[in-house]
Amino acid sequence: MFSSSLSFLHSSLLFPPSNSTPNPKFTSCFVVEAKASTRREDRTARHIRIRKKVEGTPERPRLSVFRSNKHLSVQVIDDTNMHTLASASTLQKTIFEEFNYTSGPTIEVAKRVGEIIAKSCIEKGIKKVAFDRGGYPYHGRVQALADAAREHGLEF
Image (cartoon, rainbow, N blue to C red; front, side, top):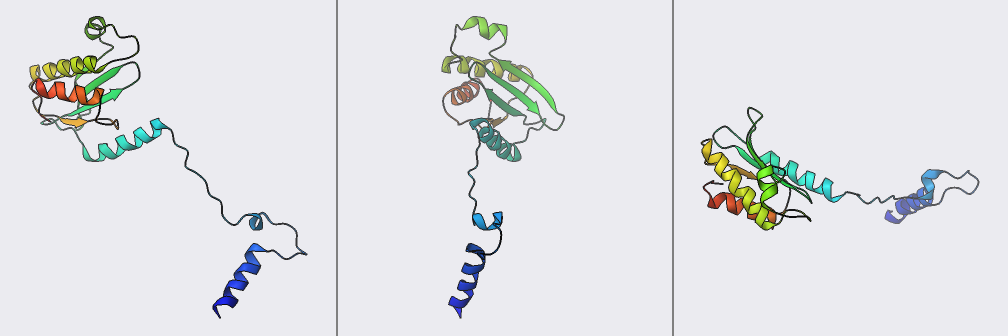
């Protein structure tokens, strides 16, 4: 009985009747498509997953990191009021003039940005933050920035 049901499936789906016109449904049974995603799309998906768990409050704002090939920026954000409380970036004149980097920010630059954001937060009375790595791996510049901010008084 089992073989008869398979023979029906085999004959009706895979081999159309010879007297009928070709039907596109019969030419291929299965279509397999690969998901084409870029590194940026993957990072954005990771950031969305992180943002579901990490939220900035007035008592504990979110320390958000953005890393590009040429620059590094950090913001301390209160998500309940949608307000940026403090920020630091390699685009700021004080950091840009202090270091001479042509190929992009290095770990030393990331440490300096972490130090500046920590000092800025402490001046404004912010001691505890929730770290949002922005979908980037906790490695290299992101880790150096976080470690420098911890050393200068921020609690994660």
